[in-house]
Image 1 (cartoon, rainbow, N blue to C red):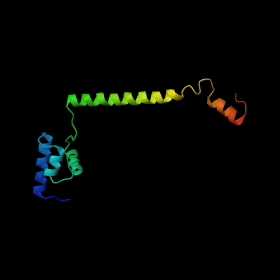
Image 2: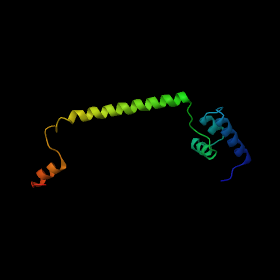
Image 3: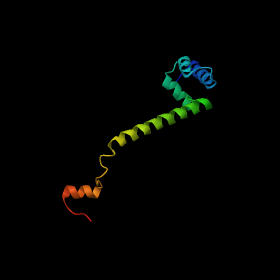
Image 4: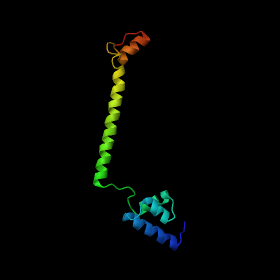
Length: 107
């Protein structure tokens, strides 16, 4: 696909302004007359990070992810504990189940 010099310059300016945090990604894609995805593709070609975190944001994201993961682990523990007592006094090994199913003795 061929582009005009004017379009090429607009894309380069938008990339530069986005890279220097003068434009948001939406502003840069609008300025360059590219769709958001096409602008992101141009960023990738120019090795410009589309998503960047400062240290505080990254730390907050990690804390949030750990909270969510811990919460999900606790929920799954609680679901299992509701049924864990059902099989308490029963032999549910594979060997025992096969023996009962086939009514044979397995050594």
